[in-house]
Length: 150
Image (cartoon, rainbow, N blue to C red; front, side):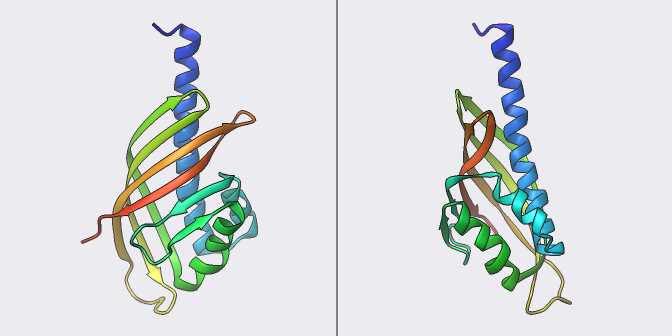
């Protein structure tokens, strides 16, 4: 049976992991819309140095390492998308020491850069993520997206 301290720490860890994912959604949208360097820097710091981002069937592919992920968000994606809005829900988070897994459902809207006057198109799917606690901070080490848009 966990002690009160262990239970309290688990609750803190759950909130911290949820916050990392929520910040990701908020920051990726701001990076696409506002293009502020400080948002891109904050976004990159949510990931471990060796993080892997895998968009599955979406055309953005796989990106290994914080530098490659940052380049994707600041250079590649802005060429394809001029506006983006993310919403994640139904978190399922498991904590095991300094490692955590998380699953979320996603509903996102985006506007292509080539047709900025076009209506936003939806994307539906699920994230399957992993996180590591490094120096007391939770960071995303793996992000896999499973596209379920029909």
